[in-house]
Amino acid sequence: LFKGSHGYLGAAFSKPSTEGAATFKNRVYKLPDLTPFYKDVAEASSKGYNCYFVPAVLGGTRRIKANFHESRVVWVDFDKPLPSGEVPPTPVDPSIVVQSSPGKYHMYWLLDEAVGPWPTEGANKHLIEAVGDGADKSGFDCTQLLRVPGTLNYKYDPPVEVQIVKSDLSKIYPVASF
Image (cartoon, rainbow, N blue to C red; front, side, top):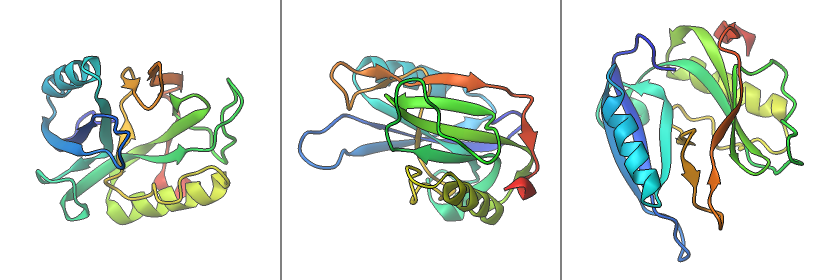
């Protein structure tokens, strides 16, 4: 998702809370070196933190739209639980599908070029509409947080692994496909 990108990777970590909304600790990591991000994610997940990232590149050190730099991917967060092993139908075959929790998915479509915030959000909105019932209608924004694959989702007892269930990196699309 970040190959050849320069800027910042946005991330956030949160402890599960039984008393209202979780508190997020936001961090940024200077691209292209992802080593500190991987280290922090592994440590945080092992200590019971939910781990999230922004799939787009930031141009500044805060996770706000004004700091958006570029995206080489568009996405949908699908929150309506589906039967085990069933992946949501989509109008265009995703490049990557991540199971964020049982029956819930993040779907990513790799782009053939880096695009700005308006094309990113526009494509995300079109995909959300096309996927329909179950797609997180608020998940279109270009600084959206999504769960990091390979970490644990601590909203469940016992925690469940966030895992890539499908990956075909040869599926690359022009943003106009969406």
